[in-house]
Image (cartoon, rainbow, N blue to C red; front, side):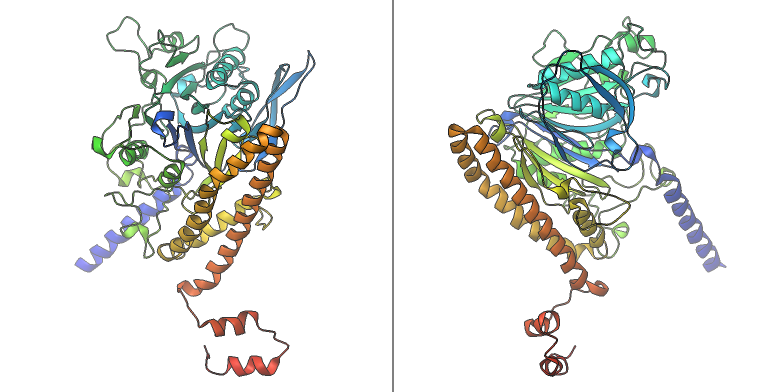
Length: 554
């Protein structure tokens, strides 16, 4: 009887878990949530202002360089919806706005992230209160990726870009959910947060079409955001560190979330950003701050952390690559340990029902490195170098844990075809994204073993690119002093070379993992056997048979 009861309980638990998988796997709140970091210039090893983005979800990872241009008066630009999913959704025109006289070259991807003047952007979604979403028939025109694109086309500094995005959202209406964008230039790193104007707003009403605020990250500090609003109190009398739109107080008051006569202080995250203070968000915020400032001994279960912290030591772009690959190794939350990691210690987790978890949680721990990531970046903006050389974005397709970051300079005029090519519905060796997606997926068959091969390749290639960076930039700078166009061509060719070599090497790694871990084993064979079986001239049948049936018989 006891054994029957035990079996029944086990079946019940198993069914509950499976139901949880079925219910939560399509939860939109857990599918497209990214992580973002900003590093001030005095917190970096070389004076770079840096930012990151793990673009977690099915967003367009194709990369295009969109040239700037000059335009006659009366020209317009079309604003669209679904640009961030353009690889598999129809892009829908929503309206037109006047074009400016001159635009800058920018880099178009799911969330546009760089322009020719070293403006760099990361992103994470915080959703915000549903009451602030504009109605479908409101006429609100802008989604976040279009604000980013127009800002990058029109601004030369972080402050200019923030003001451009905010003004456009105020004038034409913001139709998207709560979003946070990092906006960095060679001198300043900012965090820009925005929500809609509310369900009562209508285009042409004269009321602000969005609610936005921006806060500068102190030059000596590091910020990390993980899908909740973190901008708190605003000191708008100090424009050196704060910016905000026209509706910053009035919209919150209108919808009943802010009482100017009350005793509670105004905090942007409280009035406009849904709190979402469970460990799905807070654990990543803690991890980045603790990784860079362990001396603070921050509580991993705290509900709120400082907006930014001063790191214990200066941060390099390689450090940002490392933390983006993090799955809590060396902490009590290590996702490569325990039953859920399986026999091969995979850190990947599908969402599970929160009914099986403590209150205010969303299932498994959420790592920074995610299998569902479309692409990842770590950027450098550097004031002491000319723009084409000073701005470099380290780009990786798919999961940060298994990708290899390659440098793309903001002055390049084109990128290789493999970065522009993708159909998620059809596997293709012509696509860089598929090379990295394949390796990431295959590694789950034996993660603890395969990740060693993957890490070895990352170390070799990234180590080379980082070691070569000073020499490459010195050469480019010498060319720039003679002919800026020559320096741009040199960097374009160099970027193409590192991308093409890295993608080709990734495909070779994919083939190696398929054969090396056939049937889950890490097989090793004598070199003579490998040479005979894999590379011998099979027209020499006698020689082939002598070896096959001889000393190295499998």
